[in-house]
Image (cartoon, rainbow, N blue to C red; front, side):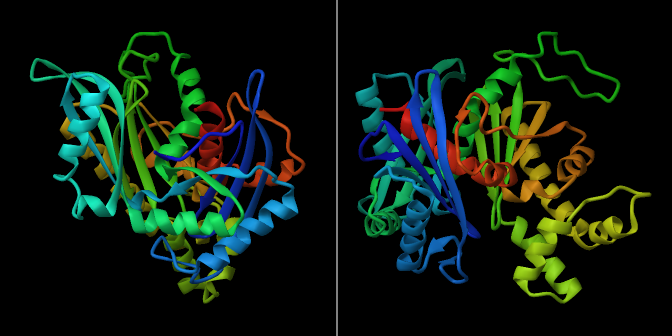
Length: 379
């Protein structure tokens, strides 16, 4: 949202709580081309509570990832974690853009618990809606503290990279999925008729589809809900992959790193009657996953109550923790809604030297893909 320049080739860099992901894209004749990627674990204590604690460590990792993977572009888009930003949906009367910008900045003080001199403010006009019989613009207001943006700028300057813009991670994910969401929403042409279970099939695009995009990372789960492709709700949940790892660590008496490896390499959610080892793992982590599912369901219920929408038609799952095997099936059973895995590379040409890394970590790269894609599709 906070932009400083443009480039024809772009790096998307996602400084996550457990790993740093880098994606390189360039403009092609038929759309974005993925030309490079890399991923590296973040050392313990380099980030604390989602904030960068050691800028040198982070900048060194980014510099080394670029050098060892041949990522040569000098411009990048990076991510600000949603929990480090303020996102609010605010209706405004319909007005020319210059007047809207002034109105948004005047209204921002009602949503910002800091002095306006201490923050960066940006906004996006999402849609024109009708409210109380009047046409209004629905605006997404985004606020971030200047100190945190300054820390990011320091990291990238020390990495030898010119920072092109800063986006919010949850918005970058939606950017990476925009093409696939539009394509899949246009598949169903039938009318919305309820099936035997009482749920309606997803309508075609523009006919009222309500879609939830859930990103489960290491520290935070972000719930985003769109209607007709327009973001209408977003909420971070402080239950995610690290909570699952901590339970494994406690039960199996492993170090955190060993428990993380157990989760990734051996973690499978099973159903009743499955293999003994699978059921043992499921029993260990089930309470935590059910707690997460409960928070997601509460987000759905809040959205429905606020907007009077009766249904969430489908759910798209992404983020590093979404790779936990059978998690999509588990959540499908929990919600009674089809849960499908995200396709952040839909419509993107892929030409990378390490396709095995991309295959293994595709969902981890969702934010970085969305960031890089923005860098070569805007400006």
